[in-house]
Image (cartoon, rainbow, N blue to C red):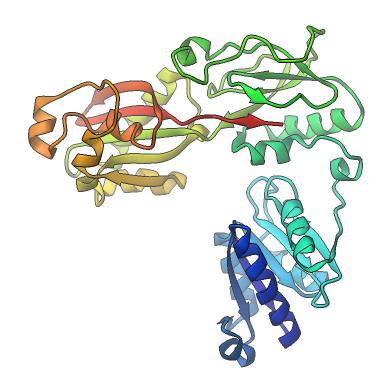
Length: 368
């Protein structure tokens, strides 16, 4: 997580620094800010205006950590709160280190887990109030976040949480295997919408769920698939693995709309949801290609660029082009770039209007 922390008193800033060190040790990136009168001596950033700090942190960070009264945090973030599925996690802790309160985005944003981490770091009590946590029930939205799954159906996600709390049966289907046992009240249903597409992959769909007998399939359920149209239940929560890299080749100065058009066609043909894409990849001579960068930035996707030597070293069988080899020094850009991070080629080269696109799939590891 990229965490922005803030304190308002000398004691609060010291507490923030203490927590920063513990959270960094856990793999997070943490920046601490405080009043200018403490900043230089404590080695932290000085904020000039609290509302500006809050606005910027809310827009860019994965989580905000207030070392303060909860009321200060609530008033500060109130103008910016929009959507539980996109808002960052917000957590507050008193400067004495007694109580940690997740205030916003407890499950999807990870505020509950962050509160537990903060509490463990300083011996505080995490005050968790979400219904599934209070009742010891499975939280589908939190599980989706931990397994890097995009939630496509927000209303249905809430319906599943309500059903779980009521002890009702919920269906579960997946194009990908998983480790562990399904939660209580979840019933497995084979989901093979993408079976033909994924059958050649090492992590191809499993036929049966271990340890679960065939039971009547509920009307309400969750489905894990790349296919945005996969709805095996009357009311389906579609969960999409964020696991696809789009390899791109293009002529110099190709406009974004041409790249976007072929990308949309390729995803549609492969039955892959746009939400599955995590990165655009290409050869390093395209690192300043305006159209490619525009498409990536518009969707918040990473960009990955590789040298001709790195692409040539990618193992596998790819569509070779003598012209491409003569132009950039490697016989294929889009397929090799899509697979350069150890991905499996999901869809081979597609070409149109001076653009080539291929899709690569990383391993999808689901765990309960």
